[in-house]
Amino acid sequence: MKTIAYQQCINPNCAATFDVGQTLTACTGCGELLDINYQWNKAALPKSLREFQARWQNRRFPLDYSGVWRFRDLLPFASDAMVCTVGEGQTFLQNAVCLGRHLGMWPGQLWLQYEGMNPSGSFKDNGMTAAFTHARIVGAQRVACASTGNTSASLALFAAMNGFQGIVFIGTGKIAFGKLSQALDYGARTLQIEGDFDTCLARVRQVSGQLGLYLMNSVNPFRLEGQKTIMYRILEALNWESPDWIIVPGGNLGNCSAFGKAFFELRELGLIKRIPRLAVINATGANTLHELVAGGLTWNGGNVNQAAITEHYKRMERDGIHAHTVASAIEIGHPVNLKKALRALHTMNGVVAQVTDEEILEAKALIGRFGFGCEPASAATIAGLQQLLARNIISRHERVACVLTGHGLKDPDATVYYHTGVNTKQAKQPEAQATWGHMSNQPVKVADDLDAIVQALGLDKNTLNNSRSTGYVPTPVELPFVEY
Ligand code: F0G
Image (cartoon, rainbow, N blue to C red; front, side, top):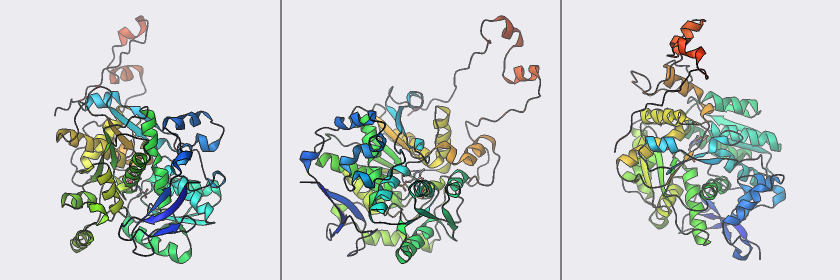
């Protein structure tokens, strides 16, 4: 018996099922979101998660090399021949010793999952490989998405590599130039329409149905199947032990939904003993999930209080509230995966926090100062961690894995502005920011002259020549220690 994959409505009162050969982004019965579910043939599954890691050494076989498809037994909806892979998911979990120490955590307990190391520079590639595989199965030729930037970059890359026509819709919000440049370079037809991301997504959902475009946003349940694997890789890096916490930024809420599904299934399959807790971090200017959860909204066995959600959106409209944050990737007011996110919070005993733009940018500078760096949205994780430590929701001794969703070079304007105060126009800025960055690292203007350079480096010229080394001793990093 083979494992059978099917699509299923997440509303337990409907639970309609559909063939995986259909192209759907909502239940045709009740309009709710869909999952990809499986009738597992447990006998054909690895007996332990450990069995997956051997595949990685088989680097010449693209499906084993991929950080998504080497776990293909856990997302078995396609035959190997149909898979569209570009080598996604070669990402790593870094033990952020110095940053963890700086935040007052116990040694070695902070881990950063660098999803920016994907081919298009963000976690989206994990989902795109799965959705493009489905697009190939159903014979789609044109693929489309609305995007705050990363989805469009990833779509454009996969389309170019796999022979699809890519079409991306961006709003009039300020898309980071790193991301826009990718969509343009990879040849996607790029349409900028009046309105923010929420307007854009509503329009592209309508248009894709009418024009037969295959929709690549995270309402596409196949996207989330690929994104589940980020959790498998974190487990793998921790020798198949769950961390205590997973922290992730919340925008359209696809990622956190996928993480909840990953752990739900692993528990169901008896492949994991303990499920980590989940912290989803909103920006205060795009905090729909935070507001609704703070107001008492829960998954409630699938009977989510729709009236509360409708009321919230009505209030936003009445008060003219639109999402606004320096973290342009998560500038989303109407997150489409809201209900799945509530389910993930239930599965993972999760919490939701919100952080300000200033906190995001300071956290981003901290992450950069201690290593590889990331784009602003990803830094919401560390800003959220700081807050949750201060509120004693996360303890210093707990093991925490933060998902850094996008590469630092995606949005260099935000970084340059933080450090120099020079607004390159593309940089979105928090309002009323008088002085800039606590960790601002300004370039120093210096004359083309040895003495001037020595002085600017704070060195003594006399000790430079007569010592065995250059005499340069790096000064230890002096950063304020955070007390809780
Ligand atoms: N981090 C980054 C870097 C993102 O690009 C996004 C979403 C998120 C976090 C939020 O993830 O939507 O799963 O909650 N970017 C989308 C885009 C919306 O169009 O690129 P989510």
